[in-house]
Image (cartoon, rainbow, N blue to C red; front, side, top):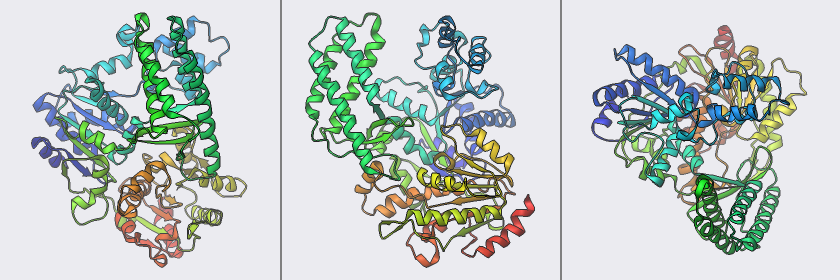
Length: 630
C-alpha cells in the first residue's frame, strides 16, 4: 500500500485503495507521507472522520518519524471551532455577572477557561453537557481583532494550517474542515488550509460522499428565518429605508404558512424509516413573488453604507441569498438542488437543501487539483473480478479520477475465530410490500434474548431504524434478562455508555454512528447482532434521486450502499489477532431458502467465510471458542 501511494504521487495521480482491518493502514500512508515531506519540504494534509482518529494519527506521526530517524517533525490537528474554548466569551460571562444563578460545575468550567487551564474540550477532567460547553466554545471568531488571540489554541491552529511557509509538516483535519476548505477556495479563492501541500490523504473515505453532502446542505427552521428577516428589517429601519416594510410583512406571513404546510405534510407521513421527508408541491404559495421580495431586500441591504456593521451586513446578505435559493428550489424555479424536510432533536420542523451532484463538486475541486489525493478505507469495494468493478460504486459516487489500488485484505484469522449465523426462521419485515414490522420485531426480540444469553451479554445489537430500536428496548425493559441493557445516548459523545458496556459485560443497543468507529477488542465484545440488512430507505429524497438516475437501482444503488454499511457494522467484531465471536444476522432474506439474488454478494463481501443457519452449531462454537476467552 505504501508503494502504491508513493507511485501515485510520483506519477502525479490520485489513488483509491481499500485497506482491511489490522493491516496498519495509518502506517501504510504515513511512511510514504513522511518521506515525501522530507524530500519535498511541503506539508501533508490528512483528513479523518473523527477527532479520535485524528488524535491517533497525530501520535502515529510522532512514533513513525522516530522509527525512521526523522527529527523535529511538526504536526498540528485542525479541529472544528466548537472543540475550543473562547476566553473572550468566557470573560464576558464573568464581567456581566451571569454566574450568580449557575450550578457549581459551570462555574468550575468558566474558572478553568479563564485561568488558561482548559483550552480545548479534551482538556476537561470532568463531564460537561453540550449546552453548557456551547456557551463558552468558539462561535464567531474575530481572529486578528481578538484581545486573547496570542493565547488562543483555536487561533494558533488556524494560523498554522493556513500558513504557506515551511513551519508545519503535517496537517491533520477532519473531513468536514477539508470540505469547507474546498468550498471556500472555490467561492473566494482563499481557504482555511494551506494550498502548499504535497499530498492529501482522506481516511475512512467510504463516508466521504455523505460528509460532502452534509457540508453542502443548508438547513432552515421557522424561528431562525423570522429572526434573520427581522434583523434585516431593523437594519433598514435604522438607516431610514422604509420601502421594504410591506414586503417584509408579506414575507413573514408566507414563511409562517410555509412551515405550517410542511409540518402537516410530515404528520401525514406517519411512521417512516427515513428521517428525511419529501416535500410535496406547495401550490398555495407564490414562490415567484417570494423570490422577488428577497431579491429586493438583497438589493436594499447591499446598497447600505457598511460602517462598523460590515460583518453583520455580510451575514444578513448571505442569509437573504440562502432564502432566495430556498424559495427558488421549493417553487421548482431551479432544479439543480435536492430538498427535503425533517424534525430536529427539539422536534422543530426544518427544511434542508443541497446540490444534486456531489460528484461534480469533488471532481472539479479535489481530484482535478494540482496535488495527489489518496482515498482509503476498510470498506469501499464491492464484488467483482476487475478492480474497476470493485471500486465502481464509490468512484462514481465521488467523481473519482485516478488509479485503483489492489485490495489489502485483513490478516486476522476470521476462519477459526469467527462464525456468522443467519437466522432462517424469522418473519419478513415486509411481505409483498405490506408492513409486517410488529411480527418481525416480536420474533427479533426473542431471538436477541436467546443469542445474548448464549454469550452472557457482551453483545452489540445494531438497528437500521430508531423506531425498531425503541420498540425492542422498551419491551426488554419489562423482561427479566441476565445482562445489563445499555442504549445509545443522544448526541455525538458515546464514551460513557461504551465504558459502562465494557465494565458491565452487558448488551448495547445502537443505530447510526454505532455501525462504525467503535473499537472494542477482546472478550468484552463477543457478538454483533445485525437486526436487519441496512438497505437505504427507497423513499428517502436523496436515495430516491439516485434511484431515478440509475438503470438497475438494486445493483447500482441499494445493494452497494447496504454492503458498505453492513461491512462497517460487522467489522466491529474482530478487532485484533485473538478476538473471537459471532456475527448474527436476523434478516432471513439472505437465508438459503429465500434464494435472494443478492445472497452471494452479501456472503462474498464479508470476511466471515464460516456461516451457518443451524443454531446448534452456534451454541457449539460459543461453548468451544467464545466462552473460554472469558
